[in-house]
Image 1 (cartoon, rainbow, N blue to C red):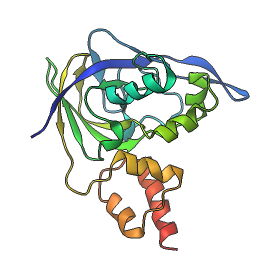
Image 2: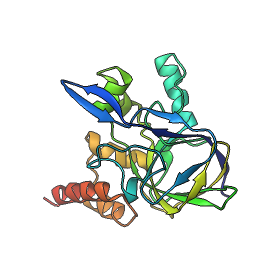
Image 3: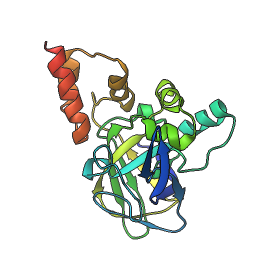
Image 4: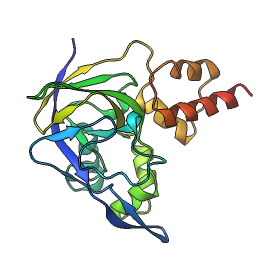
Length: 221
């Protein structure tokens, strides 16, 4: 049985000046909820700024998803309620924890103009930009330790989305790697070669696929 969830918020960000370490930068990480409907294209949400295209954006990372249970964690950890979009996400989903999602899971947003279909492709890895945005130099480390990375999504069927839209969750097949397992690769996890070969059988984002292949090459010696 596939659970029915909903979108709690849809967020986009405009170019904003940000001090990252000793350099001035421009980033779209400061996202805010959008009223009404937002068009979802093959590579991004309409009106959403993506500055660092080396690490963000593109067809395999067209949208970034965070979840209400993950935000509940930060409410307790930080002692304040963060508004949707604070962590740079485009979509806030009710009901699921992001680390438990698997590559290949599909989220079908039931919209008035037709369904929009997303596919899970990769975890988000925290960086200095996130820490600067949060005003806390230790936040990237906190984010890693919390193991609540959120997930990047590929757009399989474009359309429009809005807060309150119902979402049907369709799980990937047996053996798909979890977002948590893939997140751990960036923080010291060393799966064996057979496990890494298994990861590569799934529809990973291109950047993540390259990273997994590098881990596999190392595991093979």
